[in-house]
Structures are given as C-alpha cells and as structure tokens.
Length: 509
Image 1 (cartoon, rainbow, N blue to C red):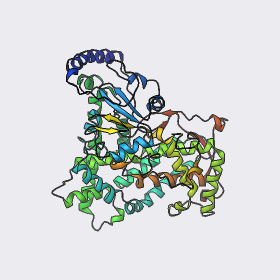
Image 2: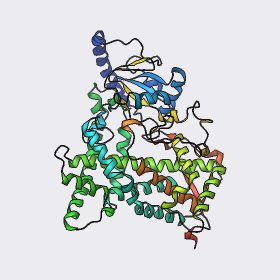
Image 3: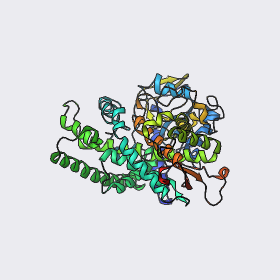
Image 4: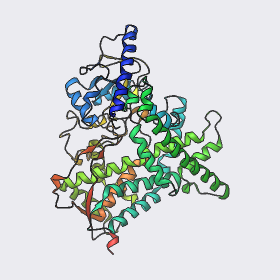
C-alpha cells in the first residue's frame, strides 16, 4: 500500500480539480446528515483532511502514533474518504465479530476493479452469494487440509532446491531475500499450474507491480469523484496494461490445461494442480453458480498474491530476528537438529514436533503481520461502536501491526520472545483478537492452511542445514531492521548473509 506522491504537473492538476470539488462540497454540505458522537480524531486540513499526517512515515506506524493520542477507535478524513482506524483488540472484535455483517463489504477501489476482473476474486468481491460460493470452493476444494497435504512433494522439492542452491554458495555472501522469494513463488507456481510455465517469471513481476497500486492509498482512490486523476496519475492506464499482460498469460495457461485434459486419461487427483481442479468444477457446471474463465483468473491472482511475497517476507523477518537474538537462534537450531538427528534432512511429516519453531513463526507474525493494515472494509449501514456513531459507507482500516504490539496485551510488546507462545492458547485463526495477522471474521484469509507449510518447512531446513553469519563484520545488534511499507511489510534492505553448512546435513556427506 504505497502512498503515491504526485509530480509537479500532477499536483497542479490535482489542486485545480480539488478547487472544483470544494465548490461542490460547499454547495452540497447543507444536505449532509450530521452525527453527534463521531469517534475522536486529529484536526483536519481543508480538502486533504489528514493525509498530511501519513506522509513521511510508514502508515501503520503513523496511525499507531495517532491512536496513542486519540484512542483505539479514531476518525480520519483521507481526501474524500471518511475512515475509522481500529487499533485495539476490543474494537477489532466489535468490527469483525459483533458487527461483522455490517463491515463485510469492501470499498470501491478504482485499481482493484480492473485487476480483479470487476471484483470477482475472493479479496475484493462484494459480500453476498457470489462471495460465499467462491469462498466455499476455496476452503473445501482448493485449500482444504487434504489438498494442501497433497502438495507436500512440491514443497519438499522446492525447499530442497533452495538448500542445494545455498550449499553451493556456502561461506560466501548470498542474497537470502531473492532466494526465498524465488522459492515461495516456485511452490505457489507449481501448486497452481502444475509446473513452471514459460511466462511465469513475467507473470510474477507483473503481479508484484499489481500489489503496488491496489492499495487504497493512491490519489484516485482517495478522490474517486475527481475522474481526471485516474488519467493524469496514470493509474487507469497502468492498471489496464497490467491486466492485459496477466490476462494473456493466464488465458494461455487455462488453454494448455484444457488441451492436456483432452489428451491425458486417468489423471490421479493427487497429481492435479489448482487450475485442473477449478476447470473440473467449471465443467461440472452449477447452473446457479457458473464459473467463468475470468473467475478462475481472479482467484489465481489472489492465490499468487497471498502465497508468494507474504511467505518469503515472513521467512526473512524470522531469520533476521533470530540473528539479532542468538539465544533464540541457538534454541531453535538445537530443537530442529534434535528432532531430526542424523537423518540429514528435515521431513515435513515431523514438523509438528517442532514446538519452539512454531512459536518462532507465531512471534514473527505478531511483530510483522503479512498485511500491517488489513484489507479495508466499509460499513453497509450506520451502527454504534463503543458509544460512537459510525456512519454508512465509512471505510474501516484495522491496524493489525499496532494490535500485535499493544502493550496492554503483550509483555515487552516490541521484543522478539517466541517463548510467550509455548504455553499459550492464543492462535491466529481469528478467535483471539489481540493476534490477527490473517484477519478475522467472515473476511479472514482462507489460505492460512496453505501458507503455514510454506513458512515452517523452509525455516526448519534453513536452521537444520546451516549456521548463519552477517557479512562484512556487521554485528548482530547493528543488523538493519528498517521496514519498507507495502501490501506486506518488506525489509527495506535485502538480507545478505553467509551460510556455513552444518555437519549433520546430508549435503556434507
């Protein structure tokens, strides 16, 4: 969710458009409904509202700082958009459980309309029958536990390639960020497509560009009535171009799968990829819920978006925190090497025994949730929360990053301390609102079961096979942990490390 800063020309056009908008607002203000008890919030500037308070800082941090002053339910004006910011577990529960049906709608985002095939994906589709049917398909057919387990060999194969690539460069500086990204997209690609497609790398690069503009923080999305901004900012053109490129690649992949189906008989279900499964559902045909090619393409975009960068970013932060905390690193490595002994390798079937490693993953997700600001919601009608009135069509932004670091619920909230989860029942499945890295309620991420093995297995292998050092004499306390804000909280700088193969690794024999 990157804030896009206008050029001089764009700014001039933008201010001119705002002048016209201001006249419209002033002329129509007498017809507006007034609310007596709106949530508190900072003073707003004319036209831009509170946008200036987000510039120059990472939005999730800026919003947390504002919430310290104005409270966990805070009202902001983001251009034309009236928004509330949720920064506590109690208010999050009100939004995502008590009033979940009221806040189940997604806001209209100009870029998302084009890139999600007119809101036919899971993330942005309107709450209703279509969304319910699509989510049911994802949870019962595409991403259920049995299906995810059937892709175990893909995960093990891709992670083994990762380990071999690192081993071939042991005792040399490697860019772990790049290697982890290639691995997680490799797993996702083979899971969805069955094999690496010829245009897969191009598709992934296009997808990364998509995540930069589908944010809700671009000027056209904050001033939707100023249509000129869509063209002047280049958003409409860029979104259309990215959509065209992704659509061509996905169309070719669907056609290849159909041709393969015609020439191949008795394909085992275990060998099917997600495109095969979707095409079977399409062919079976539910007259009340016909699945189009565009529906399939939209869901593929979602799966790649959720299964690639978020997993690799979580792995990066986990390794970085372990390096900064050698005591925790030592304990995590000791556990994985004790459980798998001299087998020479980590087996996914034994991951459930790694209690401390699972705590490391949980703690990483607490400090660095995949989306620091959950995908925004919008109220379909007015309601009351904590004694405050929330008008209809108010945008709701839940600061999962701030909630995970709330000192009222977490001791030493900014400290990496995985042990806090060892004897705790707190989980990320959406019932514990102090810990919502994947969201909660009806709109909780349906791919949790798919994402976790893509994090736990690679992390266990990295800790089993290698010891790690920082290059160029950098001390562990000096490791740069600066964030770069996006749809996921990436590291601002790539993680450069030196791996040293451990004697227990089969690669040493």
